[in-house]
Image 1 (cartoon, helix red, strand yellow):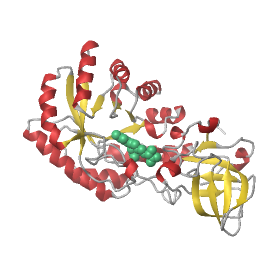
Image 2 (tube, protein in one colour; image 1 turned 90 degrees about the vertical axis):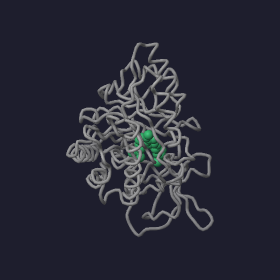
Image 3 (tube, protein in one colour; image 1 turned 180 degrees about the vertical axis):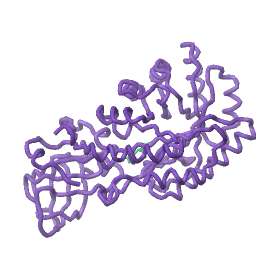
Length: 382
Ligand code: LLP
C-alpha cells in the first residue's frame, strides 16, 4: 500500500488513515458475491462506526447489525433502511429496546427467554409487533482467540439447544413478538472455511428440528466472523468473499423462500485502516531496543487485549532490518505493539504505520491517561 507521505508530513500524530479506494473495492466485491447468490449483508457497526464509512456502506445497499441503542440511532441517521437494521446483544436495556421499537427495526436477535419477555411487554406498551430471531448457541468451536469465541455452550451468548423447546412454547404466549429468524454467530477472525462448514451442518440440524416443530423461519442469519490476513495486509487485501459465500451455498440448506443473512464487520473494513504514529524515542533495553511511539493501547487495544498481531512498517526509513520492541507511551506493560519486530534503522521522528486497523481499532480506543482522541483522515479528503 502506498501512503501519501507528503500529506502526512504536516499532520499531528497519531491518527487513523483510511484508504477509501480499498474500502470501496472491498465493499463492491462483497456485494457482488453476495448478490450473485441472493444473500444479504448487514454491516456490523461495532467494527467501525465512522460517519463517512457508514454513509459509504448505506449508499451501497448494506443493511446494519447493531449492538446498542446508539448504534441503531447512528445507523438510521447514516441512511440504513430501518427494516435492514438488526439488533443483537446479550444485554439489551429497556431504553435501547424502546429506541429499536421506535425506529421499527427489522429484527431483534434474542438471546434469552427473559429478554423476549421484556421485548414483548415493551412492544405491547408501544402498540407494536416486534420481529424477532432466536440466537441459537450452536456449540461450534471457532478455534479463534478465546476472547472472540462466542458459539460454545460455555459462552454467555445465545440460547442453548436444550432450551429451544421452552422458547417456542413461550413464544406462543408472547403475542407481541413474531418469530422471523434463526440467528447464529460463532466468533470472529475465522480464516478456516472448515469451521463455517461445521456451522452450516449445525444450522441444517437446527432447521430439521424446527421443521419437526412446524416452524420455518423466514430468515437464517449466520452472523459474521470471516477473517483477514493480518500478516500480509497487501497480499490479498480484499478477503475471498467468493469462497466464503459459496461455502454457504454448498453446505447450508435453505428452505424455499428463506433468505440468508450475514453480519460481517472485520472483513469489510479491517484492511482499509491504518494507525499512523511517530517515533518519540529509541531507547536501549536489556538485549533489545525499544521504539516508543506516540500511539498506544489507547488508540489500538487489540495487541494488549488479545495479543493480536498487526504488521508494523517504518514509512520514513529504509535499509537493513534490525529488531526492535515497538511499544506505546501508556503506563502499562501490555502497551506493546510487537516484540522483535524487524524494521529498518529507526530514529526519533520516523513515521510508523500499524496496518489493518480499520476494524476494532478506532472504535475500541479510549482516553485512558486523559489522552486526546486520535483523529481520522480519509484518502479522498487529504
Ligand atoms: N455478529 C455478532 C453477533 C457479533 O458478535 C459480531 C462480532 C459480528 C457479527 C461481527 O463479527 P466480525 O465479522 O467482525 O468478525 N474486538 C474483537 C472482535 C469482537 C467481535 C465481536 N462480535 C477484535 O478486535 O478482534
